[in-house]
Length: 210
Image (cartoon, rainbow, N blue to C red; front, side):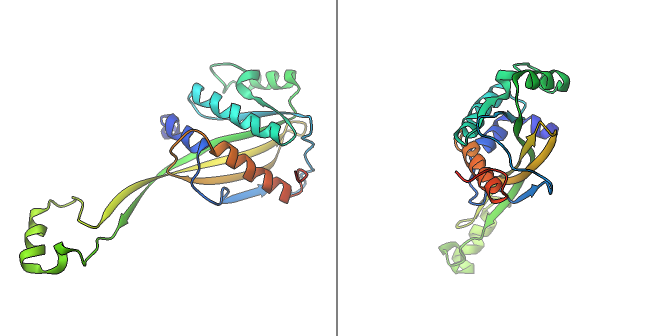
């Protein structure tokens, strides 16, 4: 958890830009979940990251995506603009006062580093002969340095969960987890994850097809 909280910029980028074609690597639906009545209903957009500025940008984006799908998307920070959003009683009172019936939550749950090595090309000039080529280059290149034709890079893998709660039932009705690789910019992932989540909810019969 401390690693997640200390990496707000990486997490924000993960929430709003994705490189994967399959947004959700896993998803779950409550067995007794009833269809969600989103049309005209107030739905809070909640993005759980430690950076207040990043959270506001992401919640604005998620709220717009909820509204585009028939609900009334409301950023959580506009309902409960507190610097300590973890205060559950105060947050609950604010949501109930605002008449919010549902919540869509996005939260980064894990960050991993992946080392990827591209093999060297052994037909390259440095390898073609032992004498007059590889011998001198091999001894002259420090161990651990990049070899001609090869590449070593580090991928950042961020896992984000997306959850849909019915506040009328105080119940999780749907959840999915995404695995994002090398997030770069602050723009597209909320839209992509919201679209993917909507498709999954439609597939499960929880919301009508648009």
